[in-house]
Image 1 (cartoon, one colour):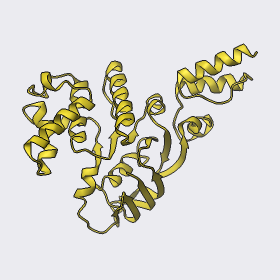
Image 2 (spheres, one colour; image 1 turned 120 degrees about the horizontal axis):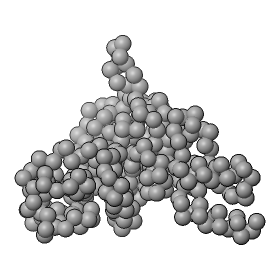
Image 3 (cartoon, helix red, strand yellow; image 1 turned 60 degrees about the vertical axis):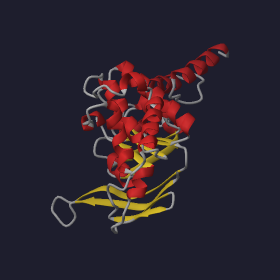
Length: 284
């Protein structure tokens, strides 16, 4: 499902002394099946952007189109859009409320008016996709499982709607290192197997680099950078000017290049950096 924004601006509290722009003249195209990471300092417009793509916010000016569904400042019924564009907020486990995990995941599909058999199938598929064992967990309370499992239940509830686009705002926030690693691997597998369009906000450059094909950097409601992950972390000084850092391994590569080592770029993954360093050593 492709996404196109044309000159989108969004003003909070218009006509008041508290008026501020969350987005300023943002134009952007995300192709069907892309994995996009969105980064930027706090207040840069990242979450505002996701809420426009999902239709929770409408632009003050400009136009947004998601697979033929056009969103403007005018009032529209966007229920069809929200079936296809899933948004997972920060700490989504705080929104769990049903007495069992299966019922919580089933809440969205039931509200679509689907038959119980179809709902049950969607619950099973969503739990399988997100790495939760259906038989052992379906009848358990969502409040009796670990934090990482709660996060997965919340994401499964969105996946049960069968979205074409999955957007996650800081999906690993508050998880322990193992939980973060497992969830990121699950999302990578989900993107690869389902060909779903994946859009992720994170303050962790390592996480963004490990899961994204393309990285967008925002600041003050504007897009300041939009590059493939292979090129995104080349300009370390630019990131510092934007109040951001680069992945640790990119910083290491940057310092090695400054020292005159024959390395072609600031790799964002440890595996790629390792191979580049070994090759440089062999040819030294």
